[in-house]
Image (cartoon, rainbow, N blue to C red; front, side):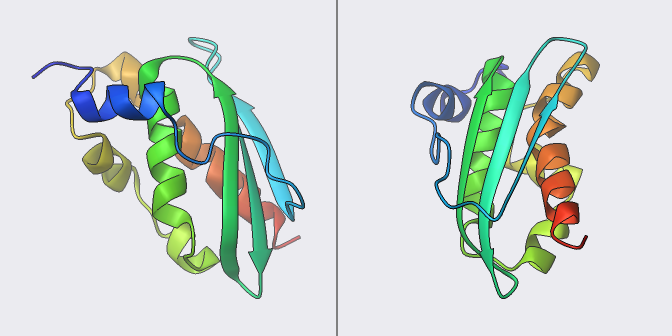
Length: 122
């Protein structure tokens, strides 16, 4: 199977929820030091519900497609549901086998999301 399956390329070329979210209640940025991928996730959360989400980032198709897919997945969900998303769910959304080097690219958006959500509990 081609690493850059059509679904990944679609999200990479036309990412969903891309852009800085105005009036975000929390945001967090993180990088993958191995390859330089960067993701900043912004969320508007009210009463434990993710009302809107946006992301900005640069990097490989895997990292950017993962962020696009993840923002689709969490928009409108509760913080608890978003926190429950696993690495395996991200792999499932991407739908391609990942090399060891690409796992960190794929999970950067999930790591960034969970760090942003942790800030809501402070």
